[in-house]
Amino acid sequence: MKYNRWLLAGWVCAGSLFSPCAVQGVALSAWRASAVTNAVAVTRADWLDAKRDRTVPVKIYAPQSGGGPFPLVLFSHGLGGTREGYEYLGQSWAAHGYVVVHLQHPGSDESVWKDVSLGQRMKAMQRAAAQPRHALDRMQDVTLAIDELTRLNATNSPWRGRLDLKRIGLAGHSFGAHTTLATAGAVYSGFGGASRGDPRVRALIPMSSPVPGQQAQLDAIYGRVKLPCLHMTGTADSSPIGDTKAADRRLPFDHCGNSDQFLITFTGGDHAVFGGRERRRGGAKDATFQALIVQSSIAFWDAYLRDAAPAKAWLTTEFQTVLGKEGVFEVKLQK
Image (cartoon, rainbow, N blue to C red):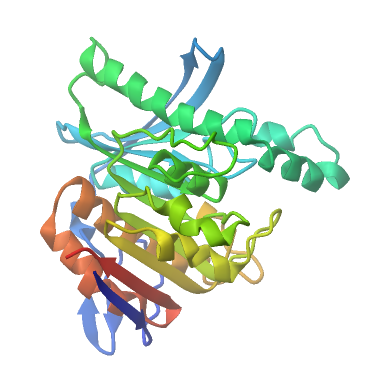
């Protein structure tokens, strides 16, 4: 296994997510900056899993131009979120030729806190996070989504023939990162000792992954993850409701093997920056971080869902310079 660690300095990106950037006078462009489609179509649906008597809301971002078939990316929100969040990711990925499906997970979505008094919301979130049922439901929601997309791609629907079902990525933030890794085979307590993942997924982007307390067992927990991963976190990315400290967010990267692994640690990045929040006091670098998230993630999807060797080369050799002083980039490549 080849392992590199880079601490990078010297560049700050500002403005558009797709703006060319400069490092010490050398022009650098965002990966595939010129490949943006003209427009992104957004649709919403509610998909029923009759076996579980469970309805899963989804929000779908898709490129309006181009005939496809397009690779798929599914996105799993954090605890208390909805399908409406993380819009900058759905828009950006779809603009670069992916059909992106944002899932909403009933039971661990906004229903956890929406009708709870302000003083009780933290406890309500903690109770929801501690219930293994929600983690299992989320994994089954991913499988439901792939099944439904498979059906739509094969039937007389607007999606017929537009989806490349052999090229499916899965991303998620916080609890959604837990869902992402579990779907790829990570075995957590409460899963009955067996992985219930979906083998149709072939690449992962876990952001702000929560880490289980049994750290002596991390090799066993993450050892079954054999898919390429682009992990993301920040030096201020401590859990707002759990026990995961910012320094521990790297542990899935450290313990995942048998596949290419990447880790971006944004300097000063906190837990909320990945959600696409707008700038606020103390978050002046949010736009910078989100631009870097978009650039690196598009290159990663292109490398591992489109098998684009230039994308992998850009990610492993050029992104270190583009990231600059905004963070640390680490790579583990399989020989």
